[in-house]
Length: 279
Ligand code: PDD
Image (cartoon, rainbow, N blue to C red):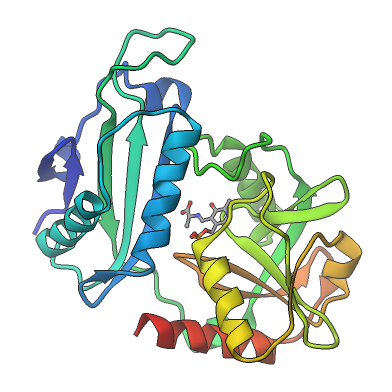
């Protein structure tokens, strides 16, 4: 069965979903997106994801009349058409198609694109082994709280890590950790306090991040949402990344510092709690 995707009201074979050259997403990265997990016929944390999508649209002033049900139904139909029970959906909305002009006029139809993919599974052993990251200057703009299409700094930094034989990178701005290239960062200190940066304009407020905070509190763990620097990161007992597609990935090496030989206890517990939450 060929892969089916969605473009502006139509479900089409993936390769037939063609966007015009003058699409603002293509020429300016002028648009926003969401990635949401799907399992057992439902989107995971669908309300906060769709609310964040509406917030992103609002922040970049893309006017629209979508409602939550539109995206929920679109996702269900697309997963059904691709015969997928579990995976993730990528939703992208650009300002639309218009001549290449430098401001952002209103009154155009936004372009809506959606694709679904199976989840990349990794084994318990891979989870236990964890990943390695470098720290790298955060070269992104000052509004990464908006999930916009402008991902070049993240892509280049992710590649820089891979070129150095690391798995990923953690961004640092003004001496403080912001987030991963495509994930939020948590540390656990020697007192088992779970710490992640407060949600300001220098991080994306991850939906997985928020859920993990909630699950940690339910376990009566102390949680602090505050800034922390590279020293606190490298001296942490545990480090992990969270995102909709990674769920929770343990970081066992930061630059040349080994954090631990394998995934830490709290990382394991919180990952299990999250897997139980999604069912
Ligand atoms: N990205 N920070 C950044 C910069 C991200 O790109 C992401 C997710 C997150 C985590 O957000 P959430 O928990 O809501 O997925 C944090 C998605 C998965 C992506 O771009 O593929």
